[in-house]
Length: 106
Image (cartoon, rainbow, N blue to C red; front, side):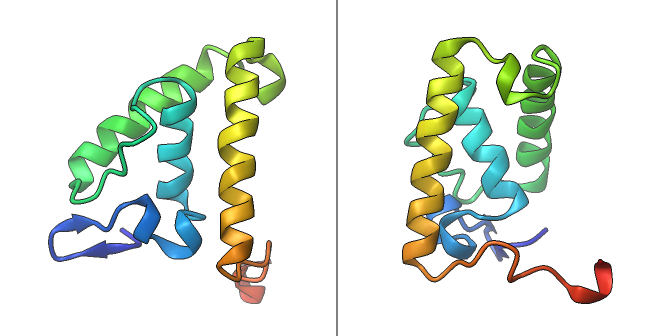
């Protein structure tokens, strides 16, 4: 699991570029769907807890056809607010979209 220390997940705000990782995306989506309150960072969470969260978020996305466009207006607006804020914060921290892609994986 990326972004883990000895005690579990480091928390979204301590994760790479403020959570621009798969786990960070999972947490942001959990906030969007109201599965977690927006102040829950998941710091210290175990793999099992994160897997359970993944399953809940996946089920929520499945109900909406895995598309932001299919979200009801309230959820779509929350998604935009949460993800736009995360992108802005990540850019402040030096994140460059696509710069962390392994060229050998392309």
